[in-house]
Length: 392
Image (tube, rainbow, N blue to C red; front, side, top):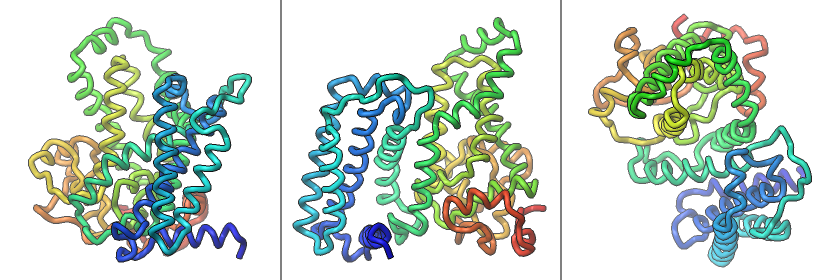
């Protein structure tokens, strides 16, 4: 076994230590937080060095503000201090030493004072900073909710397949430019061939709240039927099965989506938003809302939210869509409004009950990102064909 393989195995083993070894005062919390901050700071420093290659176009102006450099310096110092605390408290030193090494590497590359090394702009970029912001922002919002109000209190933070779902986060955010261009191309093409200026002006002139509610309803109708087709058509199901292969539900589970399914879903749902002429403010608000909601409905959050659930999709409603029970097959397709499932006969939400498990019967989808990426394109075995898609 190579040094890198042994290091990865040792680091993973320490992150997934038994709960008795992760109590406060034993250096695991400080070491884990130090590692997260060190990785984030290293990525942000790389973004400072090569903004045209590794940063989201919309975030680049913020890199020039003094406050960004002050915050980055604080993150580096915080990671350093926590790494030292972990080294002092913890018998296993790998978390502390790894975080310390990354902090030193980020500082050596320039730290908070790093400046761009790119002489000319690049038309293609990777969203490395978007990955950092995405993980930190959603983590700060949803990890405390899961710790304080968990549906499954015994579910571990570094649970089964957490690395796999984290890699899905990484790929989808790093390729944010490709996904955005490819998904918006059909909507923008249709918009350019329609001339409804007066109609679009009337749509964008509505109160913001009306625009957002209309976008939610229209995109939900589109996504309901696209989602349902992904369950009904065998070839499409093979892509969607990747998402349903998650056997644990938490704030990272929603990231597990095949690249092709992301493109198809976003392409279809973008059409009503753009072709009808909704304002940029309404589009931005909706995109931010659906970004939060998609994480929330997959989270390990135990409140029933019965009153809210009459009108909006909640975690319990969507968990039943992922349930492994027979009665959970082909139900709860809506993304925003359960009313659509009531209208089309696919509503299922037994009172105060949650699924006993998640995933697909027989668990035919292989483990690992790349195996799952190629899974829809290969010939399925008889056993796999017999088990899915559900409802056929």
